[in-house]
Image (cartoon, rainbow, N blue to C red):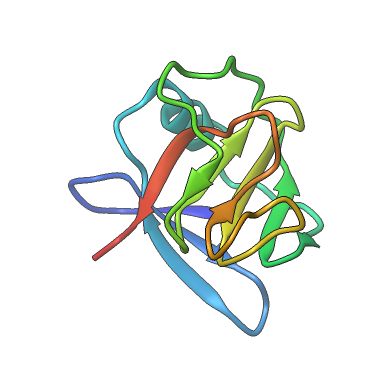
Length: 112
């Protein structure tokens, strides 16, 4: 994961055969992630969630939530990991995209 230039903080996830561009929201968690870039880590999956460990250590934000829109990018403070929810996980109910409990914090959004 590496920073990209521009007005808003944009990052690129490079998974080898796939790259994803994203924009960080203006949150303390996002700023901590940006300060730690570039990050190299092994990618793991849990259902339709992709996650990987980071060197970032920040507390859960008040707006933290576990249910996200598919494609949202989040920071999991208990696991010190970035999580990207693409769809159902083993704890999802119905069609929701529910990331690991406890709630995920520091949500970011895909660049448009």
